[in-house]
Image (cartoon, rainbow, N blue to C red; front, side, top):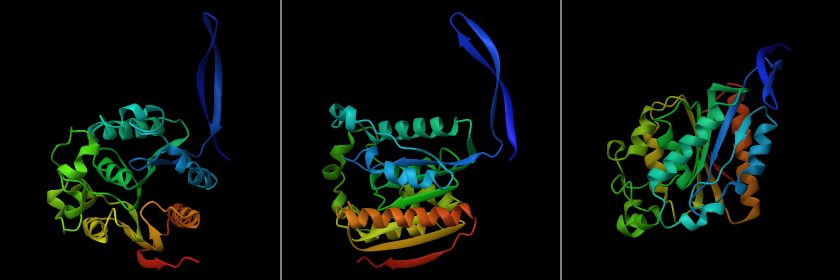
Length: 255
């Protein structure tokens, strides 16, 4: 195995001593997980651990307004969420054992929407979207929780949306990496029309893998659905890491 050596300075009280850091010469892919609105990072730790076992460096995090910062729930905007995602991406990319040219972003619902937007701002090689949400571009700086009524999202998400009318979809039209899109059969939060909008927008992607989880709802409330999604995600990454992308469309049967 090849190794990399670099000089380092180790602080000792008010002085420094010289050392050498030796690390494996092979850089590893990075994977950033972005949770949905109302969720938290703990939902993704198990999935991240399984991808780490494949040789990836993974980062999960809590968007502001969630978990420890729940008090900000009614004040955070999509702009705040995007800043969080950018900061988490930059943290991951700065890790010395991460290949900055091989970073994946995995997003669910609101996190999928932010992940799509991220591809226009940072290099992303693999994009995995589960039930990605869609919002109108207006009122970007308003508190996110107000958008459901303000944008009449229930009706908006039932309509075909041309890519040029959505920043998230426009970003997808320019993305040329590999894409995984996962939908739930019984999703009443993100209707299948939204999924169709994202799929149509990913016209330049190197590969698009589409899966429908039979019997699943938006939040994958059944534990068996959570495990099924984890298995699906891990298997897709296994293919991606082997550089054998397959474009396909499947309904995944659930026991």
